[in-house]
Length: 113
Image (tube, rainbow, N blue to C red; front, side):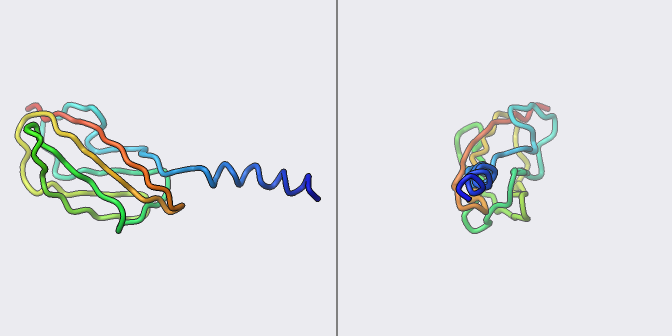
């Protein structure tokens, strides 16, 4: 019986330790794009909780650009409220995954027409 329980716990422990990880971003991470994006889109490896997740966008001068988010399952989208001037922008994100773990990260992209 103990051996059976040990075998069952191995696959479950791997799932329990998994956290949401960023699997796709639009604009792409560290990319250079010719046209300013109309939204920042992030896709994660598991569902995320909207109330405890967010995106902060900072411009070339370090000033924050206001964003609102929409979350649907594994996707978080923040429409960009104004046209972005040429320069390097930073996206800081944080999520609470469905398994209850907080995860955060950041990346940059450049607008260069």
